[in-house]
Length: 333
Image (cartoon, rainbow, N blue to C red; front, side):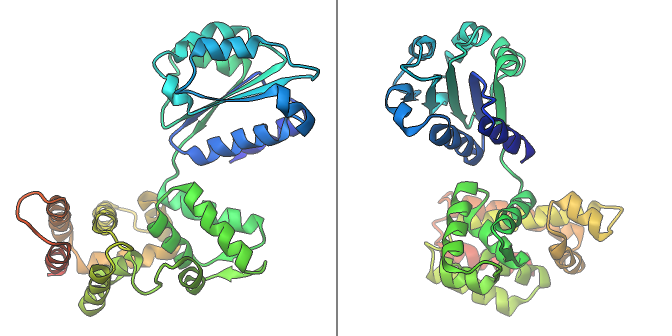
């Protein structure tokens, strides 16, 4: 993200702001910026007296302000980082007075995760004027695939679309988890490697043949034999393939397919954009649309909701195997 690069670049140049309010649903970027400030703003010799880590559950806004108003000891500035600052959400507006006139020798950082700072209120406006409010939003599925490619490209690696999709479907959109797995791959594989589904299977433990990505493809193609083979593998390995994830991904697939049917412009570029998918996978939706007319797609979404309820123990006492087998039959017949 360009905004992150700008923030880091300014810090490197010594152009520091007195307040960094890092807020949003995606903790990865909040941690990245906060960690960079923690590691790089002060020299090691100055950190002992002039760098302080606080936690929102343990302090009040008044205590943070009191610490921020102090002068650094034998150094140009002090750094105060408030982690889990969202625990201060009820009283965070008390920060307004300090934000209006922040201590210029203090760098005050708030890690305010999984919440928003109301733009209509004074605190947001004052911090935006005198410091930085960085909004860290969750990425969409198709954006995560692009993010994976960019991260690897920056380290001189490439990745095949299927391999990126396997990571996404196994780990979800949690950038921290994905980053950890990519780091492992880059330790094992030499630079200039094109990462394939086989690399993912061998080094991360995601089966390249028995995963939700392959199940979705088999269902879309109405390949009953392949779909049943994958479902049986899931039943035998429930911890690696939780039913809630399978139902969720199939529901997303049929919801996208419903949207596909409603598109007037079915050019590949339009389909990829409207469905939020990698253009590489667009052909699978053309195949699935031929196998599942709009009425059947709507019916399948209802079946998936029913299976979701059953998987949570509501109604009849169904086993995971029963729910999956019944669901697959209903979807494909």
